[in-house]
Image 1: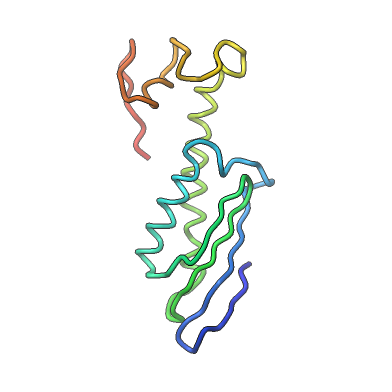
Image 2: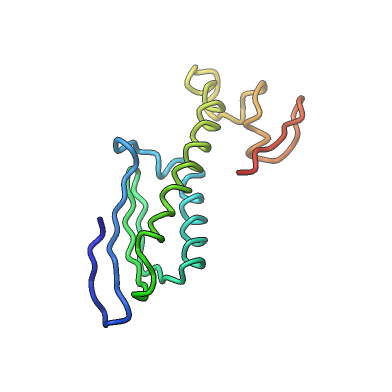
Length: 135
């Protein structure tokens, strides 16, 4: 849980640390930091808090946020629910596309000709039309 530092009677600063399940090093994988950025920006606007500092590490993040005392910190921490669902979906997509790399067939997923990885990277249609996932 975060530590609370009183600035005055109407404001508070929280130092927040949150980790990935089982400390899995997924938070810096391709596409995942963007999910975190977008989610934090959404919640920052929704709850009008100030993000003073952050760091995204492979299995945890640190945030320093400044809020007024009318804002409930647990409402802001709700960003973890949405973010975890989005990260889970992204990891499934990467798992599928990285199969040819794990099998040693190519060094980059988009180089495998029998996959939709190239579509997700470039947006260019391949041999089969892909209905892009919009999460």
